[in-house]
Length: 423
Image (cartoon, rainbow, N blue to C red):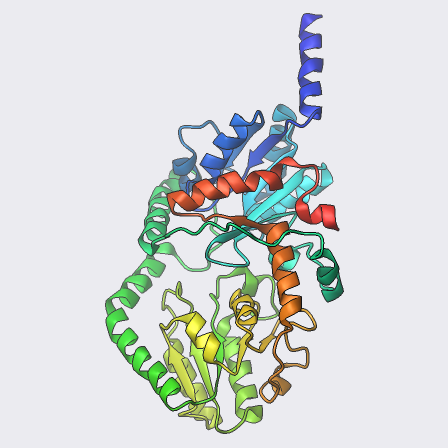
């Protein structure tokens, strides 16, 4: 009889605001471990499923369930964990991994809230945290009038804390995570990574880029200065990673070579003949594809050799600020372009693809249209997106992680997220 009363009392506590959080696969960072500790300190229950040696390394010494089966067994494990720990919420990083797609589907059936972390829509001092999905799965409306209306009721961002996040810190975490993953054949033999290329091959590519960096950077700087000195009108096309879910899941393209083909053909046919196209590689690209050669051959085929400049480095903000326009599939560089009042066209449907912000007339017409974004609408959009989906913080440096843990709590604690409350 005493045992039954204790159970009833415990359930009552859960129903008065205390949650039971399940952490799934996280980033190569201490963020999830520190966030779990903070949630426990606030009286919530915290549990974890580890899927790889990297998960295990960053969560240790905390207890966790190890998932060692094939993916089709995941719903059974989730069911067991849900019943054992009365799971009310799950937290994950990136919502397009096969593991997380299955977990989201299971959670929806059982009324479990899903909280998705991702890189920030506005970087470098913000991270994204949304309910149910991010990017193409985001609940953010595609109605500019909604943003104009809602912006009157949300506070403007203030006291944004900045921090220094050296690339070497990020690289160190990545290496630690993947070295820990060497245990996968023994501890997690059924795990299949979501990245298309083997990690050793990527690292070899990064090393090659690093060795050649001083040569390419010098040449890139000379070419950029030539652009500015001669006042050559140019359009900027920043490349995205082939492995990015923004390309693989939230676009109609298979890879960036397809996008290069489309953009260069349109540029050759429709852009002003005195203008250039500047194509910049992604700073985290491993260099496994020789984009320079691919673009050079494409330029020769289209008869625009001398009007295309390929860059492996260069300050993105400066390049955007001087460009006549920016072309992107769905990169966060588009948000930067809007902020810098640069005409922008998207080849898919990112969250900022709104009438009044991006050009809506298609790529072919974009080259001869200098329609700038409505800065008042962008202010409404930015303030609303930051208030409803962005956490001031970072994945890698200590100060950024501590900020993220503290600032994420308002998104996790309420029955409704800030965005759901406004919707």
